[in-house]
Amino acid sequence: MTENAAAIATLDEPRLVSETGVAARVAHLAEPVLAQLGYRIVRVRLMQQNGQTLQIMAERPDGAMTIEDCEAASQALSPELDVADLIANEYRLEVSSPGVDRPLVRMSDFLRAMGHEARIELTHPLASGRKRFRGVIRGVEGEGRGALLALERTDARADEEKAVSLPLADLDEGRLVLTDALIRESLRAGKLQQADETQDGAEAEERPRRGPGRFRGPAQQKQKPLAPAGVQTQFKKAGGKPKPPARSRGE
Image (cartoon, rainbow, N blue to C red):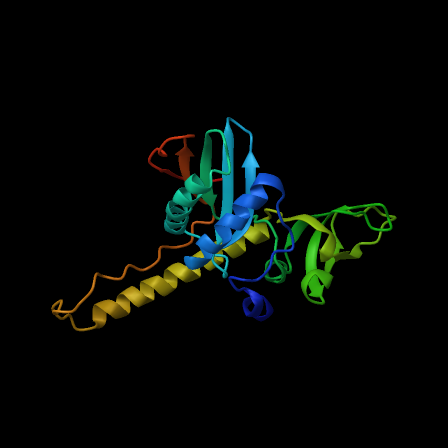
């Protein structure tokens, strides 16, 4: 994460996009619940494929979200959703991480994604009449919803400008493109995290071992490496208790 992205990536950093309808009501309910656990919402969607699926995409401010994080978030959200009863019919609750080719919904997302390719769609077309773009993120000028995204287009025709400035106030949807460079960076970040954990483990083995002591609490378990596409699902039955959660990987 760049220094600028790290400086503004907080639990209460506002999103540049928001949901409507039932998804908006779910997001309003889920935000404070997730914040108590140290997570923030990326996106909420109610999908109608193979029955209803409520997908809540969440993360820590640094972008991490493990399988265990998804499980904790699911367990905290499930009773709140049952009480609020926002969805009348049966549905599957799916809590997931943003994944490698993640949605871009906050200013810190764009700052962190500089140098990578993204697809951007605006709510209103530019003067050229275009509102869908694909290109490499080169920078962000300004702050908040008044900021402009500098994009070097990879989809420009010979007669079109390659460098464009897109108003983030008109952002409808943004998402990273799954390129080789993005995959390599993700793998490198995972290897660095595993190396840090290995070093911590080696240092712990070198320390003299002592007995548990009278006041020793339960062992602190180190967080497992990031699972970019971690998913925790739970089937919610109208008027009844949800079935036990099914753990899986992949979006």
